[in-house]
Amino acid sequence: MKLSKFPYLVQEEILQEMNDQNIFLLSFVSKNMKKLIKSSQEKRIKNIRSIRYSCDGNKVWSVDILFRNNWREDLLEIVECEKTKNDYFQLNVFGTTIDFRICDKYKLTEAYFNPHENTSAIQSIHNYFLHFFGDSMEYLWRTSDCENIIPQLENISACIRVWNSDSFSDMKTLENVFSTSPNLKWISMFPFKSAEPLSPDSKFYRAESIETVQIRHNAPAVFSHFKGRQAFLKCIRCEILNLIEFVSRWKSGEAFQKLEYLKMTVSIYEVHENQFLPGMEDAEGYVENQNFPQILNIIGAKHIEETKKPPTHTLPKIYEYFNHNTTTDPIISYSYVVRESDNRVASILIEENMFSFGVWDMTEEEFLSMLE
Image 1: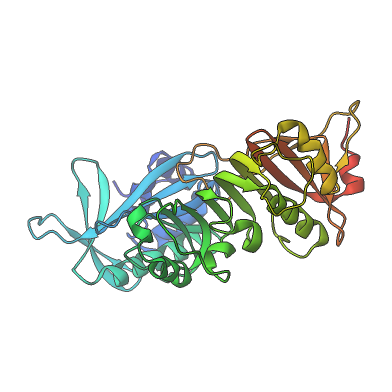
Image 2: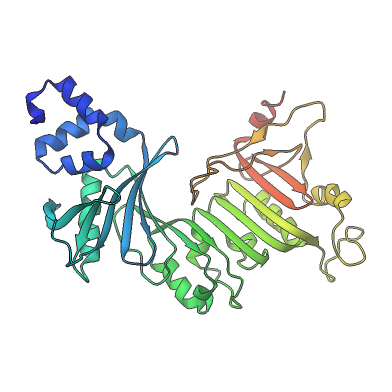
């Protein structure tokens, strides 16, 4: 079937019924075909949120498409050449000849590279994506492999998940992964075996979004050094004074200027023996629930009248590894604080095992005007 023989509307309908893998392969037929696809499938391309590479460390790189409705579709696998197979076909990918085949088992397009040529193959494929989808598209590199350096690709953002405790035997190795990675969009890690702290200048603290599980909230010291937008912490213990200092630094404008949302799940709020917060702790130094209002008073929180209905703070998550819960948990609170430098508002909620902090992109006057 020669597609060009049909009227444009028929061509458009045929392309619309094709999956993204076939559209991708068809784009190599000619410049005119690529132009036709880009013009007729403009709405389809605009519905794409991200092109995502995933690497699991076994010399297989998968590429999938994430859509704005949270649906995903496999696009391509990039794998090392297998000499036992001979059903390859060659395509010129941005000036590089690359072998392709269709996997019979999964009906998935596979691009092959010779040993030690993976970087150049990935670079060529990525350049083709940039030319086809545009440089305004979001390109993600998702990995849980701390052994291999993330390639320096144009417009790429890294999403790193490190939950293997062996990766923390040498924190310098992990710091090197962060420092050599491109723009860090999201990091999730569980450093329970590490005795070494991250450097205050670690690129970890400059990631747009972080998730970490830890014994104490200050390892990593997110309350002291975080410069990103969203933070999700789980810790066993949290010292109240550090929490108070965090809010105070945000209010003064000294730190956390980009912060949008912070959630900390905590088992125990505690007052250290040398911290002077009288009447707040029990005999063992732990904070009783009934003392949460006292904490709010110390940080200078303001309060919405009980007759009013507080607004709900929620945001799209910067990244969700499993693509399940794509929005932050809602914060509905009668307490809020105001930043001195620009009069911005943050809802604040302290519960038995949760501390939530959500920044509104509005002034106090605008915030109060939303109350019902």
